Image: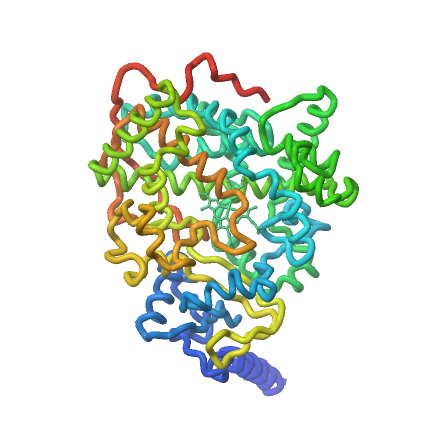
Length: 527
Ligand code: HEM
């Protein structure tokens, strides 16, 4: 009996070992180079053991491949083969020229058991195309201008929160996370979340829960990414039950309230309700010209909830982490801080002392500073694509089979000295019009590129600029003894964010608060 048990165990171990060996031989069989890997973890040992952040891991793989003059490489996410393009032309082909082969990201969603997971970021194929067409008109510059005021209304709360913390060094990361929670909460859900004044507001707590990272959460994410079909079969839920219930109820209540009281507010929720009821935005000529009938284009309540949810999920931490890194760099580089503050003052004086939407569009140096922040610290260190049709890699003797996962190593590209000399230096002049023109396309990818580019980029930039301006007009920031340097990144987060808080000295510039608009133009945000 003992011998039989021993033999069975040995057979199972041998079979697993053979399977792993075969899986991990995938790239070698195709003649594609990989970084050294282990049988147990593939290429993610340092990630699994939390020795390295996700961003550093991506950057290291890009740099290793580049140092070997490779146009592309392979690696293993555990035992799943992944393709890593390095050459700029191949990246452009995958993201734009041959997009029809790479429409999907390969993210998990399950409409039935987890309705909030069926959003624009995770949807695939025709479903994604249809929804993207419906939602695109909600992000035009006209719609951004309409929402401008709604965002500016959140800045008095931001200044109050800064004032409250002034006695000590300020954890700027926490402050900006609360600011963007309020902005997206008010624009996507039409609610006053009030997390600026109340750090433990329900919205802030739920926001933290969405981004809760830990071994269990990451394992779940990875499993649903590597084995989406199996995860579907198991009825996997990505959005925690209580978070899902919270957002679903908020959306249903808000829609019902607005429809009953015929309420109009300058926000995304208003636009989503128009899509639900009319199937188009009332002033949208393009949709009308295309003769899209209302019923074809209408969205359901569940779809509204899922989109409001992704606007929140995709919009709050990406923007707040950008603002945090921006202030860190401004604290370190006083001359850049002074120059951008001077530009804000000079431009707004041309607009009657107000920071209007048009005034912000005229602030070129601010734009350069933000772009340089996004280059040095891209919130999404890599982009995902899934090959949905067999693909011949241009200029190479390599076929990617259907289902192959691709990661575009954004952070590696952004720190490549061939594109950005002395990449560790914070230098906004890399983004003057002339320097931008002289750089290759597809070397600046904080919002991705091609048809799947971030739909909310304009909104993200606008909210970050509004927050930055409000703080810069009122305070000077500098490095504090508590600022951890060099910066370390959260090892369990897929979004690039500092480990722990980011503490800076904040000094008030004058006793009077300076607002972006005349005070009488601010409205109290109603719930
Ligand atoms: C600084 C702020 C932001 C950054 C850096 C950022 C970055 C990104 C990136 C890198 C992608 C993937 C693009 C690709 O795969 O090519 C993406 C997609 C997306 N983002 Fe953003 N984002 C930001 C703000 C926002 C905001 C404010 C919203 C919504 C209000 C938003 C909504 C989305 C959505 C819905 C997608 C999926 C688009 C699709 O698949 O069609 N993002 N974002």
